[in-house]
Every structure is written in C-alpha cells, then in structure tokens.
Image (cartoon, rainbow, N blue to C red):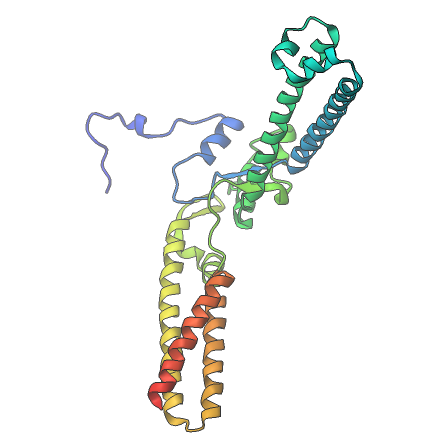
Length: 293
C-alpha cells in the first residue's frame, strides 16, 4: 500500500479540479501517463498552411516584378543613376523619392522572403510528423464528447467550433514517435491490449504503450530466433541428405528466399538492410553447402 510522505498535505498530492472546457481538456491531455500518445494529437491545418504559402509566394512575385521594373529603369538610365545601383551607401542616403522607394522595396522583400522561407521550413517539418493511431483519436473524441461517463450524463468539453477539432482525422498529427508498424506490434495493439490496461475512466481504458512495445519486442526476438534456427537447421539437414548438386543449389535459393521473406514480414527493414541480410544469408548457406560437400 502506498504511503504519503510526512510533511506533505494530502490535498497537495491530488491534482486540482478544473472547470469543464479547455482547462479540463488541457489537464486531461497533459496528465502524467504511461500512454505516450494520449495528449499529443493536434490539427496541422494543412490547407490553411498551404494557402498561406501560396499568398506569400504571390506577394513575392509581385515584389520581384517591381524590383525588375527598377532594374530596367537603371539599365536605361544615365550614368548618375547607375552609380546608385553600384553603391548601397549612396542608395540608402539618397533623398530622391525614387531611391527611397527602392530601399523600401528592398526591405519589404527581405521581410517577406524571410517569412516565406520560414513558412516553407515549418511546412516541411509538419509534413514529416506522423499521424496518430486511430484508436487514440477515437478515444479522445469519446472523452471530449463526454461519452466516457457510464451514467449517460456526460457533456461535451468544448463548445462552438472547438468541438470539431477531431472531425478531420486526415489533418491530425502526432507530436512524438508513432508506435511500431511491424505486424507483431500491430497484433499486440489490436488483440492483446486488454492485458496492458493501466486504469479505466468510465467507458474508456488507458493502455500502456511502453508495456505493449516491450512485449512486442520480446515476441519479436523469440519468434525471430526460432525462425532463424529453423531455417538454418533445416538447411543443414536438407543439404546433408541431398546428393544432387542441382537440387542443393535450388535449396540454397529456397532457404535464402524464405529468410528474406521472413525478415521482410517481421520487421520494418529498408531495402538496403534487406539486401545486406540476404547477401549474408547466401554466404552462410554457401559455406554450409561447401562444408557438406
């Protein structure tokens, strides 16, 4: 049984209650939890972001057109005007209206170009963010609408346009690392999640992502070790009893293909990693073939 440390009032250890709405929603999403994806799902507003970039791009094109017009005037102007095109000091100190407009345009281009480049970099960062698991989105939606109450008296946490924050799952992003997508991890999350419930909140259950990930890793190592052993022991036995060289070469191809297929199904290995592992498998099976000979 857990005990409260001496000198600390019990009420100080209990999170203060928050009024329903954004205060309570923020408290729920930011609570300490073993669930990595509970409070890390937000809208990316990709359409608005893209439109903002398009507007900045259009503004830059307008400014560049104005700058080209100034350049054309300088090109056809007299020698005195060309001096201002060669010296920044003369240009910024000039009191002529045309030169002041040129300096004003340069500073505006500098500001808009910086904003445009920052928007591109931020958009690239947003695009790289992963999508949240569907079950997390559904759980957050149920809780936000008050559907976790077993007495049927739950009310939505947000009103107005805030209630639509989860209505477009395709625009949601995950601030953090998405769970592994290999088939063992998917199997554990879909069919064994009831074994990893930390606590229940009405009709919702909070599942430990870390414990599921550790369990998936353990299963991966066990199954991987067994499959590797079966493949190599099977190769040794078959190559020992088969006498035909042609059949042996065929068995080398079969076991190599089975190894590559198993590796591709059980892991998220990239093409280069699959190629390297396949080459190593061919080498080992070839060594076995020569040793049997």
